[in-house]
Image 1 (spheres, rainbow, N blue to C red):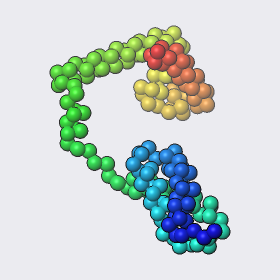
Image 2 (image 1 turned 180 degrees about the vertical axis):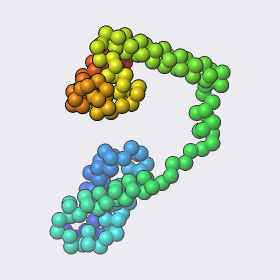
Image 3 (image 1 turned 30 degrees about the vertical axis):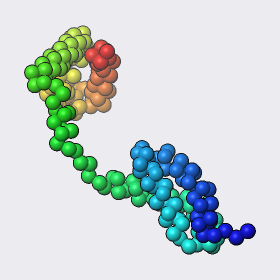
Length: 182
């Protein structure tokens, strides 16, 4: 049975449209782009005389390779396109909160932050008052001394200083930061 070129084109289109459409649909979020990619891929395949002429032995692999190449080209062009934002969009986003409420929100956020940081400082200070190694953590965090310098002042080995600091910081994280984050 001999098919005319238009019949071959229709058969090829019917055979490959749904699978290629599904391939692009899973990877592209825009419906119009999926349809454009599918039709441009199939059109490109049909314009190749080897496809309908049966000169390509492994047509399945060839079709999927062409579809993949179209997808890569689409992704690369989308990534290189600058995103244009209209002035109206910027104004709409900026004007959804009245300026007086904006100030109130920032004050609330800063007050909450100050309250939380004060709670953290109180917890840390209370916990450090109970520790014998308060001087050790103070020298490390406030005076910014390294373990060798702290060891010389406190007559400890630098390894011991590092180990004690690590333990202290872990205890503070467990006891104070979990309280602060909750």
